[in-house]
Image 1: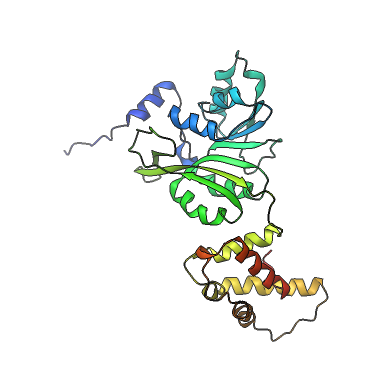
Image 2: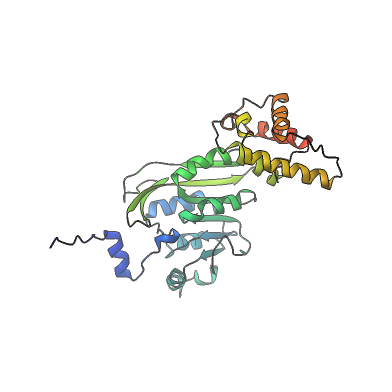
Length: 306
């Protein structure tokens, strides 16, 4: 009879198991334990003692206690009731107890109280939707995110925000410098996936550009689907043409503008790009002024992105 192979648990897994907390990696739970990275993130947030801080996914509170020491108040949003209990136990009987407000639930679906800045070790599955949720606010964010997401997000953010990314590769388990850590995340096939992370700081431009942000978001998403493609190619995609044609007809109906039933939206989009010299431009080489001008050219012709 062949020997049964027993998969060895990692040292981290054993330590967590002995502490009585088994993290749910299915929802992206990972605990940031390196004190150097925690301290650097808190310092980078430049928290004043009059500010309220939102922390998403506080876990067992390694970063929460540092934030409580700096801020007037910390709102910690945690979806796992087990970790909420651990966090409350950690601050119970300390001067921090009255400064901590815990919100139990999904941060994407929960109505959050007022806060001045967000500092977070974001779970992988919600990194993108949460960052985009904050992007069009006047709030700053300091967060640990997947390095691949951070790199792809730079080009998008740089158009609307001041973005700082510090990404220094380090070996697994040796997070000795601010910027990046390597962690291991369990996936459904019971294998271990190596994930590199980066710390990002995002701040809104002040004053913000004079644009409709929903319109802006729609335009930039189309342009950055393939950032190396020309705009002429990006606006030839069938889903893009259909969406803009629908928006155009709604706009004409609301404004009581007669609609040409034989309108060729593909040709109309191409004409707008050609006349304004945008056809051969690429999203990765354009700056904020280029995108504002492009949005204005489309809007003047009744083309809207929201």
